[in-house]
Image (cartoon, rainbow, N blue to C red):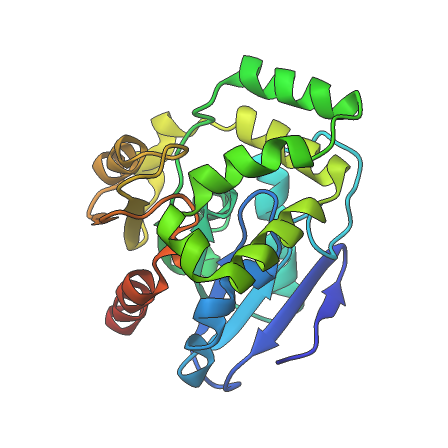
Length: 262
């Protein structure tokens, strides 16, 4: 397990052969880079793997909200520049997938390919719902209230029953999320809408959706697929939102095949 390091406000880890192609993994809301453990067990044998905690998550700084998606994309661009990384395959799930799309629009020069997982091209839940959720958190509502409904959206009952240890790790990761970081990134999501700019993304793109994801649905994935010229679409049967954990035996081969072909 590589040692975590710091660059500016971001916490990151870098693993794998120094001369291998770079793959960057970007986490979802309420997680940290440990959400990618299943893929981190595989990728460093062939790739230089960069994982980082998004602003306000994990051990990265939880600066004062609000944040914007442009800000989150610029954070990772600054990290890549500081590490001397000129090109990377970028894999983002949910919030990480939104960050990936914005990064491709703002710093096309950094991107070899995008893998957009369980994500959307606009703040699909709508600003009023986010405003209500954020107001409750500002009033002191504990994360525990959101935990079980969140886990139901994220992970299938089959997974929760069969891998209790990993399930407990995921719950602990969510509960450790800094409140200000959750609020800041929630506001970034609610203000995100690049539907009119999808045609500007001109790098190779694969979109992966979970068939049973109620948060970022198959229809959201289809919208990105239709908007980005030449994009590929994969729908994983039975998978829910955190599909890299929920269905790693299906997801990871799709990812490694994509990377090998690009």
